[in-house]
Picture 1 (cartoon, rainbow, N blue to C red):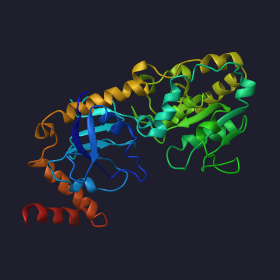
Picture 2 (tube, rainbow, N blue to C red; picture 1 turned 90 degrees about the vertical axis):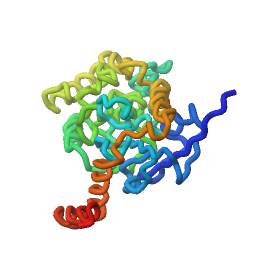
Picture 3 (cartoon, rainbow, N blue to C red; picture 1 turned 135 degrees about the horizontal axis):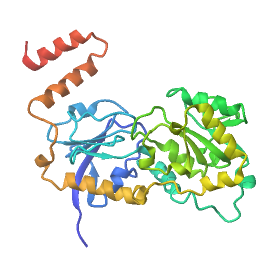
Picture 4 (tube, rainbow, N blue to C red; picture 1 turned 30 degrees about the vertical axis):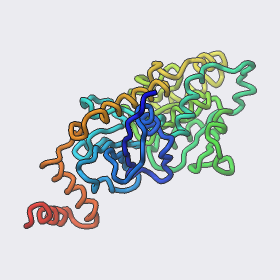
Length: 333
């Protein structure tokens, strides 16, 4: 049996409640290494969810960024990154949507694989007695979500099971279980950007509904547009409502869409994607440490990092004051 190499890693500036042991990055690392979480780590994974500690780590550390939000990585601060965008930056970047990341999200994403394989005895009348679900935690994000909810509600009641615009008495405790009794699900992202697709669409598919999806204009690179109602393809939200009503009244047409597989390609299934993440990380870690460095550590990189550090520390001061402090810090003037 091969003895795995030991590596030391650290996770900084992630959101509260991060399950360090079971998210995808840790699981992918353990495919090839014995992993220890240590303060004196050689490999630091950082995010945008809980502070700026990664500004202050020693420069010998290899820094790898992860975002679960619609943010573009700052490659002047980090060596490598995971994000939502479709781009090629040599070996420095890999696309990793958030529905692969945490263990709960992974379990839901696995349900997407078989959402189109209906159980024996399935019927719309018994398994989908409710019209449409809407589960949103807060009112931030695109106003189109509320507009879609209001337009569909003129036709039939849309059950809002989140904290935002709740109309069922209290927020639902299990989103998948709540959504599963519905024929449709409003799955709108907070914003629209190429590549930015989140758990909103995977949770709709996991609940075996037809998502009414708005957000990523290139969603068909990952998911089968024939398995959803893709809002971007319609001239208006009113036209989307007309399509939903038509499907609601035509069981055969509804079932035809429900039986469509969700993934556009098998490569995006969770187990296949985990192998890609493991290979990406292996390429980084199998290099000698100094050869794995990518952002500049000699001149422009430290200047940029100092500017960002001072911006953080002087957030209530004017830009000119920040600049003056940085000049004194950098040049001793």
